[in-house]
Amino acid sequence: MSEHILVTGGAGFIGTHLCGALLKRGAQVTAVDNLAAGKLPALEELQAHDQFTFIEHDITLPLDWTTPVTAVMHLASPIGPAWVRDHPVRTLQAGSAGTVNALEIARRHTARIVLASSAEVYGDPAVQPQPETYWGNVDPTGPMSGYQEAKRFLEAMATAYRHEHGVNTGIVRPFNVYGPGMLATDRRVVAAFVVAALAGEELVVHGPHAVRSLCYVDDFVAGLIAMMDSDAPGPINLGAADGTPIGDLAQLVVSTVGSGTVTIVEGRESGGTARCPDITLARNALGWEPTTDLKQGLKATVEGMRAMVEIQATVHFDVPTAWQALIPDTSTLRCPAASVGAALNWLTTTYPVLAPRLVNKDGQLVSWTNVYLGESNVRELEGLNTALTGDVTLTILPAMAGG
Image (cartoon, rainbow, N blue to C red; front, side, top):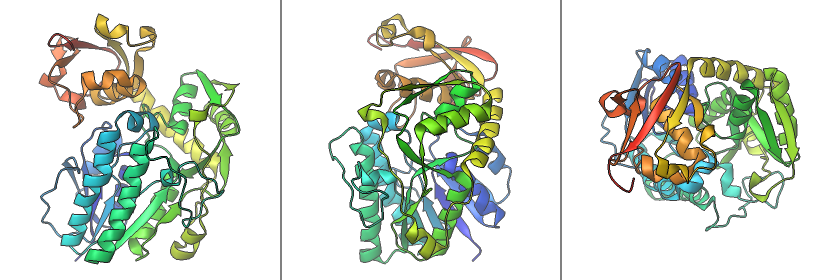
């Protein structure tokens, strides 16, 4: 049988890059995604390929899948520290039920499955750099525990399926991945810095010496495919061995974009933990290591995000008066976005208190809130997938008292 690869989370930033790389090598690719994070332009490009199929589905629910597959790449997971901190239940569901459903597909079809864990399993590491043998330093009830424990469960369940059911599992631990194709509403450090610099805004750095491992997306995808082609069980770290201080990253983004300013302020405890991988195992088991220079990768990232920002709308939000007391400054209620879903993702990530008033656990509009584009209710258009261009206003109107 020719290669047929199922990619969960296939419509996301890493997922679309992976699907594109698999198509280039001649594989048939099926992507499964619930589009909760928005719809990337890259998905439309993939859908033009005759070897690509897209299924809109939440992997936390069983997928009735009967078509044979040779491999499963399980990437489906909520992203972004702010989002996962404020939605720990949905994050844990993705890491638990979603992982079991993906593993079941691999078990039924005797397929190799590669599962994306996270460097978050190391928590606040007492060891630098982190080898895979390090067990981590994780607070199971801390602010990131939903995400950390979801990924630790993923690793434990993958290992259990390997031992009990003989499933050919492989676990990778990604560190920070960046590159063109990131959502402009993504609040992670590279995307946030690039968007701010493109707008000529201030890049505020909390503690300039905090370090991030930054791996270019093409390098990371090459590591995923190398893992798929191997029988290594993992876990295996995939990331840049050399860390980059956040202050240096901000300065490099500003110089690459040609606009923006950098302001250094005192570090804060919630500003993130320094994590850098020991990639000796990846070198030895997969013959893999990153090859893209940070300057080169940032240049491509800026060019890609500049194009995305240019084609996106500038979205202004008109919210109910009762909500304004929950938001420090309503004049900041604007963002670049290509769809209603992406705009609401920005709004609920930036102001998590609004999330339950707008979206349910399935990432859909709650029944008691309506969103209008002009005079049209977006429910009567294409819902969260409604495309946006130009300078637009989204008016939010609760449909019942208490909204």
